[in-house]
Length: 219
Image (tube, rainbow, N blue to C red):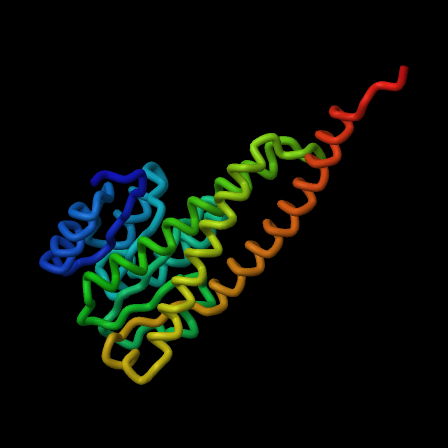
């Protein structure tokens, strides 16, 4: 089943790159690949992938440089998933640079696809919520039902994602080699609270407007 999400894979190991590309395509993602950081960033500037999966050690532009360039894109920055078999970049350093998830090689393609899917969905939902709230600043949101549906969906997704965090924070996480950036998740949760608060305000405004329109006219 084809979906709307785009994935960019930066990996110099051709076999791993092809394996990941095949796995994401089977899940319906649109995929582009690069063998080094420079080529990957050139693709990203034009293609604007929703998520970039990058190795650290690569020729002609390593993963650290690529991560820094991606993070500097600010609002256009994609979700970033880091994979490495070396200690060139620690988890703490990666998370401070804005990486969403950190995988140690050898990589479980199923877990990598699942984690990437979570973050891509969050990114799209955040963008949709932002668009709804910015459509009419200071005015009630006309499609409050869409806003409510999106917020509810995000709550469900975050609940599921925190369950994944809990699972990988146990002893088994060492075997899986997969760690999520808790700071990024906490930031997303805070944003979700802001959306919920704004949603409540919008619904109150909408309720008042409806009540005013249905008040009987004095004769």
